[in-house]
Image (cartoon, rainbow, N blue to C red; front, side, top):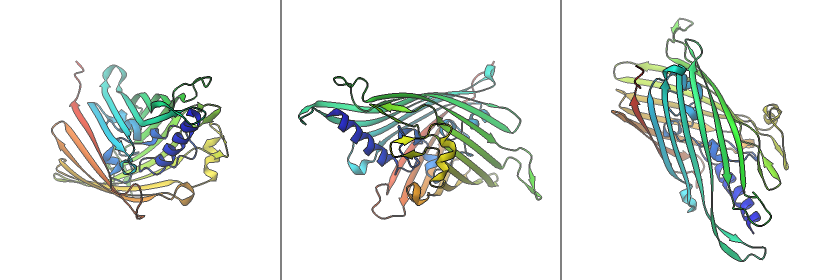
Length: 358
């Protein structure tokens, strides 16, 4: 029957998402696809990006980074998800951003689609009644601007829809849930900073991002919270000359969801109670550019056992050719025979230049 299959499929997908490199432990939250980053650059650095938000993918990592940008960019990504399980899961992502002089900031939009595959519909007796496809998607609008010489601020609003199963009989809307969410981010990049005689002008960055804050998604008679996440990050550029550019970065993130049996704490109470169980996910990464043409990346990700106990190394590379930025990442799990082993991802950013403001 559709109800059972819908709930089973939703649980299976959430379980799988909890093991993905770009997601936090879902902890009973809905629509975990919101925790997937389309940015192979950050994936290659161990999932760091809160303070490295210097292109259109700041939409995900820290919308405050949009305030520093004055270009037109397009970002795209398409990935087959969990191919080792022989599923037909697909992740599609597209984004566009442009600086708008009248708003003194950058405006951006993105669309994310997670195709969950094809499933068999059955009746009360288990007889097959055809097939149906499931998916989840979101559409977001973002704005970032400078609120001081060294601080960028950004916000985002997102519509979310989850289509797990078709309407059947009296179960009106049984497999469909909708919600909305907002993000808020800040990015500090001091242009003048001296720490114990060490000049850090334009070298240090500190970021904050609170994402996926909104009402719960309801399926059948059950409501699940959104995967509200707090991200904190910093980056430090240690080498910068005519040919070489080396940056180290660190991120800490926490899923602000607390679920006890079938009941989850509401916002903002969950912002406090979520800390009662589990610590923070930690990520370290490094990025090296040669002549701003070829990049090499590496990173490490770990989380406490109470949150899933994931641990892995990542490696990545990037190449910039004229207006194109192509990035690649590779994941190497510490644990043998892990389903994430040898996961590869690609992403593309097309830089259309500075828009004409005359």
